Length: 329
Image (cartoon, rainbow, N blue to C red; front, side):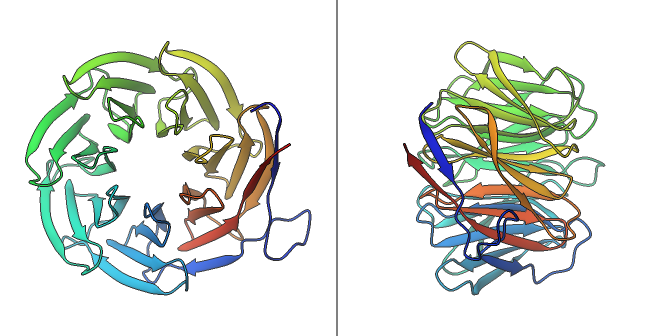
């Protein structure tokens, strides 16, 4: 990977300023804007959740809105995740619910409840296991819940022993083989769990922040990225628990979201300063700065399955699409 050359291609080349090739306006109005974005496994759909209590499905080929999935409780949608088959979408909301939606029909096919009516009881992050059999939900009450994704029956609860103040479990991510689950919390810890047994494997402590807003595994599972509230992204070796790199975002502000490109060459980092950054993982260098116009912050970043498109969702109810390409020198 040390010989990787990275180029960011833009539809309108007005160097040095980066420009998205498309902008999707969130149809709803929300104070917090677009909270979460993710691509379907085929790359043909993009899902986005927002603080007005809806999730939206967009057709990537045309940029047209395909469906609006409205949270029955009217709570903000904090996280969205496609199943590996692409037929289901899970959405976590601010009142402790996870809704399962059929992507083709747009109908809700089931609901699970963590806990409602409590401050901080929301489901902050959802994610499917790689085989699609399990759904994880990280909650503000300080635990991560595991459900059978077909029956929505609860099959496990992973409770963190550290202080849950500051939002409890803020982020979840399965390893590529599904054997390990990483959870980031408001107390500045990343927990690694054995999915089969529910046993805690390791605790990785953020050295500078209470808030681990986002965690993500590289596709080969050898690296775990985490972003914190003090403007740093960290790279960890999950096998040894060793921190291998610290990436400080140039503009300051909290790191809200991290995502690896499918080939592992790039790390996308969303920040509260209204900018997303692309890092070369091998050289630890910023290779592109993607600035949102008038943004209140970039809340979520996601690569398409091909790695050629990066989606970023911001606090101004906008989703930007950027063309990205990597080439090996």
